Image 1 (tube, rainbow, N blue to C red):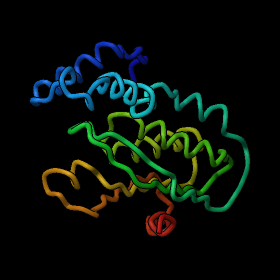
Image 2 (image 1 turned 60 degrees about the vertical axis):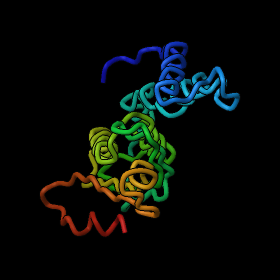
Image 3 (image 1 turned 180 degrees about the vertical axis):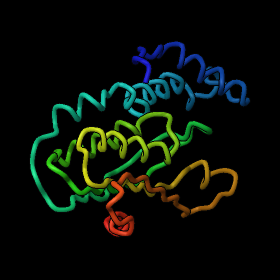
Length: 188
């Protein structure tokens, strides 16, 4: 990942105002749009894309410790992300499961890793792959899986208008001697 750059909030705010004008809405003449450019720029910089500021390797390096356990499953981790294709939100939950092999990590750190990858312009599939790869790298578990179940505004509010639809993806890593069915069962 390239080093983070400081967002140019003023340029982003102007770009949003220009975008609104291009769509036939004028922030200078419509009171409800006054300040919208700045609010949108702040929302993206402070919240929606704040995951770019997180060094996941450093986060995991300082929170992994030696230990043994049976299967660990962290469920219902809140997820909010932005679709890179439409710049519309997707939200839902993640579940992360793994079979430790000498290394553990704090449960809150697992949620922080999911959030760091989600708070970027990222496809749902990539978020799961990034979470699984980062935890595999730092924990070296027997197996690891990350399932995301998200509702995408780009699918429910436009195009198909498939209200109530959700998308489920799963990423997993496992050693050759692990039965893949065990990995999938842990996420159910």
